[in-house]
Length: 256
Image (cartoon, rainbow, N blue to C red; front, side, top):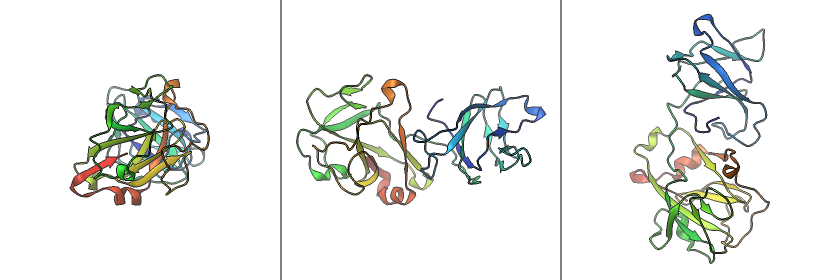
């Protein structure tokens, strides 16, 4: 399944797609995850089971009025809002026990691993301000992400023996008022902390929320990167309040 889907819904837990005669099986249940414990988070940061629908036809289909359910006596436990699925398009529907019909217009990726990053190899302690937008990273090295060593498929392989690497990326949002929700996809080995303009937005296997780990601290437990083996990276829901707090004036943001 393509991990970068274009739409997401949240709905009452259900597994049966209602078919009607005029669709001619055009919209199909393409994939189901009945044990989503850590792979894809919904818009509330929870790992609910999900169903992927796929439009296998040559024309778009408006799903308004169609339903999903796990109860043969109540076949419309979740009813789709006014939304059209285009030919060849997939949508992911989360079984979250919440009948939410509000949806984002689309998803956009602000930062991708394959672009050029500024990075600092952790052989010494960097300036603590490196997490902030105002930090001058002109003396840092540049390289294509992902950056690391010991795994295949890296954009930049570090040859110096080090326990950590710090990475920075600046991006621009034309209109931050259009941002409804944000999810960070991270592939890591063995732990990480992510900051947006100096504010922590996600972490795994590295200290406690709020502390700033030194360059030489080890991760708490072992965790292998997923992409080298063909699996999807972990996803981390960015709390909306943190997101609003992190965004800065002039639509300029830095993701570290």
